[in-house]
Amino acid sequence: MEKKKIDDYEPGPLPSPRKMDRFGFLKQEINNPPDALTKGREERRVRKWRKMIGVGGSDWKHYVRRKPHVVKRRIRKGIPDCLRGLVWQLISGSRDLLLMNPGVYEQLVIYETSASELDIIRDISRTFPSHVFFQQRHGPGQRSLYNVLKAYSVYDRDVGYVQGMGFLAGLLLLYMSEEDAFWLLVALLKGAVHAPMEGLYQVGLPLVQQYLSLFDRLMKEQMPKLGEHFTQEMINPSMYASQWFITVFSYSFPFHLALRIWDVFLYEGVKIVFKVGLALLKYRHDDLVKLPFEKLIYALRNFPEDAMDPDTLLPMAYVIKVSRRLEELKQEYNKDGKLSLSTEIKENEKKMQ
Image (cartoon, rainbow, N blue to C red; front, side, top):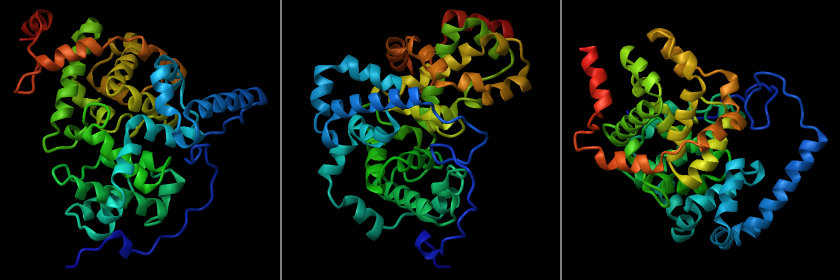
């Protein structure tokens, strides 16, 4: 039977109009509009950012060299939403990739075929289904998502397509064009600025296994009481944290929080994923140490609304120090994909036997 591409399908009916939040998602609850004071503060913030990046990003590199601490502080406070797409391209290195590869994206989309095309079509409707851009079946949003994912699966046939990649591409498409989103995906997976992410999606998910092992070790070192409780209840990070790394919190976390994490992630790298994960566990530490297995699993997949406030959670994450220890643990991570156990953890295991 001849394979069908998404272009062969007619768009479905437009979804019925419903109230949306400021990001384009169907509203779950009524939010109060920002007051005049908040609007004025946001306008001043946007002016500062425009001055910092220049027209089309022309001043960005110069400003980063002169005032890196100012840039880091402002990014951690959150990039203005109207400038987010441009700034993400600047801090990820994707803008340079785009300029160095004119016409490549068009070639990949129009003239190449991918073995993953049917898999991509099958998964598209699962990506941000409550967002107006992706709601129409085979509509413009779903077609753009298909094009980006198909192009990447051809560009890097070793990785191809894995389901979690849809959330990365979908998030990017809400802030930039198809071609821009494609090159930012390339920048992330191939490591234009930070460590390559492609190992999160390769066969066997080798980088996921490594990150979960490192996260488990950091958690047990920083929260030994919780670590011992998790060991007793036979809880490991693969039961709750895999999607944190595979989708960088874009899968099931509130969108406003995911955006703030992505601001920092693109500038500082994957260490923010470790920091946010540890901050979430610290925030709920006193409750988690009391829960049995079934309730633990539920709690680790359903954090309370107050924990999802970026102005509460992110300051907690920023003060957690992981950079040096992460580097040490990465070096210790052996060829079998395991960390050698510390004396304290070995003792805990002996007690369990």
